[in-house]
Length: 66
Image (tube, rainbow, N blue to C red):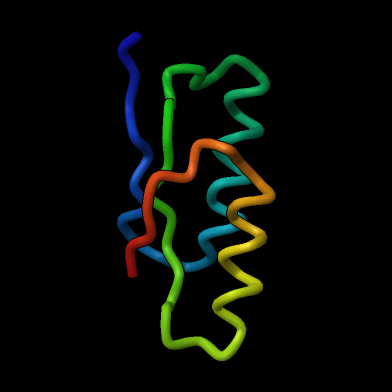
């Protein structure tokens, strides 16, 4: 199965970005996205919460980029 990995290149809010792309996929606008490399600042005090939100948002999470 072919597809793409969505990489957030200009990080602002990794969770919101994944939700946005997932919504477009649900609408059939980008069903080809097979995974995500989301953004997160690994030095944030609430990084565990941010990572959990990403995991809860999609089963397609493949990595984190900052």
